[in-house]
Image 1 (cartoon, rainbow, N blue to C red):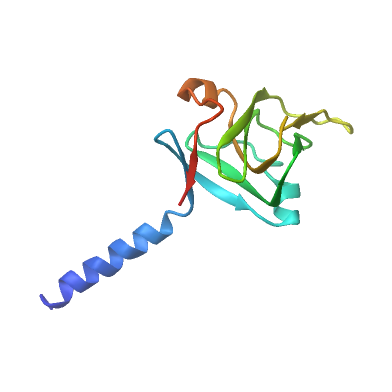
Image 2: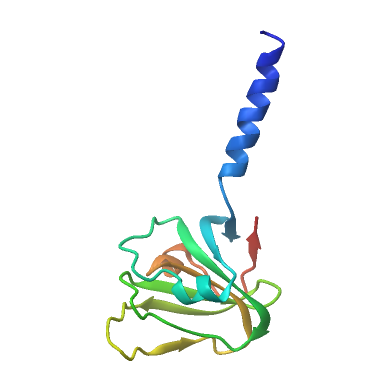
Length: 139
């Protein structure tokens, strides 16, 4: 049994490491993220959520770099939207975007071509000092 203990420990640790899920790191700040990489996942986004843990977010992935625009239809929590180019460099931040429960909601454009968007809790980008030009790493 003693000979199996190191192997069992290694298997358990490997399982825990894989269970963490994807993360986005910006300037040393880690966000556990859900990936929205299909049209249906991108359309649903964070709609209907009542809360979002401070170190969590949603990472939207598009096929090509292009001007993007997001809205907050049926979103219940205020968010910051961070737009990234194809090299995962932060190109634009929309801060403190309010929820929208109306039939027509305003849109929030990227301002320049982007391929990725990270949605996090409102005010967090300012609190963490995130700025355009910073690099994101996805693991």
